[in-house]
Image 1 (cartoon, rainbow, N blue to C red):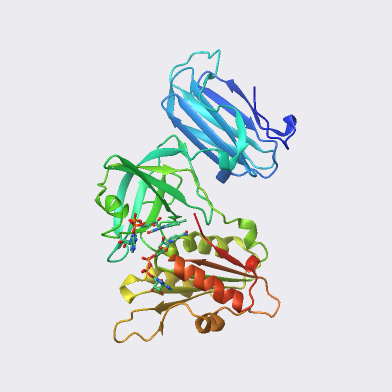
Image 2: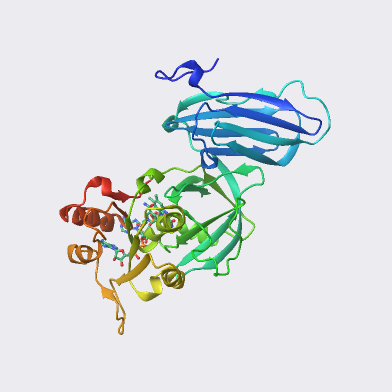
Amino acid sequence: KKKVPDNYSKEAVPSYDWFQTDGSITVVIYTKQKDMNSELVIADLQERKLRGELIVKDYSYLLHLELSYAVHEDMIVQVSEKVGKVEFVLKKKEILSWKKLGQPLESHNSFVKRTERGLYYRKCRLLSKTNVSHDTQLFCLALPLGTHLLVPVGHHVYLRQTITGTEIVKPYTPVPSFLVSTFKNPCHDDQLHIFFIIKIYPSGLFTPVLDALQIGEYISVSNPEGNFMKSQMEDVEDLFLLAGGTGFTPMVKLLSYALTSSNSLRAVKFMFFNKTEDDILWRNQLEQLALNDARFEVQFVLSEPKKGWKGKEGKISSTLLSQFVKRSKCDSKVLICICGPPPFTEQGIQFLQDLGYSSKEIHCFTA
Ligand code: FAD
Ligand code: NAD
């Protein structure tokens, strides 16, 4: 019997049904939710195990079954956004009539608070590693064929690996494989691959293990999490991005999203803080983007510049921010996103508050 959250009526809880043809099985989930989208469906088909998790506001609905018979590895996930219907189309390996869809597995057909649902991991194969800078690499992982996983803007996943008998888990923010489409990327941006820009710390706990991961080896990747909501971008006219080092990663998808999906946006200004010129990630792509799109401007600030640097110098400060974070109109709607080493982010938020920006106008990315 399905457990229903206290403040939910039984009728509003998602339910599922299934039907078949000679060659296929279709599992239909009725979310009873009008604004469903592909990013809210995370599905994994491994052998005969089907796990489909649907995010419905603050809740998670889980379909978790051991299927009656074998199906092909790839499945089709279809989302009817307006009616809130989600379909998993599975291909039968043998043409026979199924009497039952399958046996329930742990927490099948349950509807619980998102926070109560544990993170689910699937193993992904490392396809390529490309240098982005002297200590930072672009990792391309292949999602299993039976996995449907899209990471929303401003969200991250966890990478998990067992290191000398201990499970280590760290958060990373997926990026598109390029910012500007003229850039030659190693793999294509599609739903089969997931890309990360990761800095290797030689004395770190986890990143040396990632560095040692060989092409063809596997690492576990979790479902997405995050505190950014696309609604924060609604009607925004001025978007300011402040990043320190790899704090750049959540800005990449946000930049693409803002420049392609917003009708209200007038300006996107990015201030990128690094130690030296060699540490600047995707500098060429950022400069190219600024040339391609008049709304976008990028400024690099170095804390340990080498001789000859003509750009801005120093660390995050009230002076730098007061010159940079300026509304393009006196009443324009502003969003300021900040991410970097914790002291950088904390100081940045303090300076912005001192400059009169409200907490609603400031977003910091956290785990
Ligand atoms: P750690 O063992 O954590 O060490 C990191 C550095 O600190 C090393 O130089 C180490 O020597 C030093 N150090 C460790 N302990 C101490 C100490 N006690 N005193 C002084 N120094 C110390 N990183 C990315 O590269 N890309 C991303 O996309 C990304 N996304 C993230 C998203 C979120 C939401 C968050 C919270 C973090 C993200 N990170 C990202 C950071 C990432 O999660 C790891 O923290 C990072 O990779 C370092 O992991 P590590 O185990 O190798 O290093
Ligand atoms: P880094 O040490 O190379 O520093 C980059 C710049 O940040 C410096 O040039 C400086 O301007 C500023 N900075 C560094 N330490 C500072 C301090 N104590 N006070 C003020 N400013 C400071 O940076 P890195 O090694 O690339 O580290 C990036 C950090 O971003 C990591 O801590 C990582 O965990 C974090 N991160 C967070 C997320 C997230 O979503 N929350 C995503 C990616 C990275």
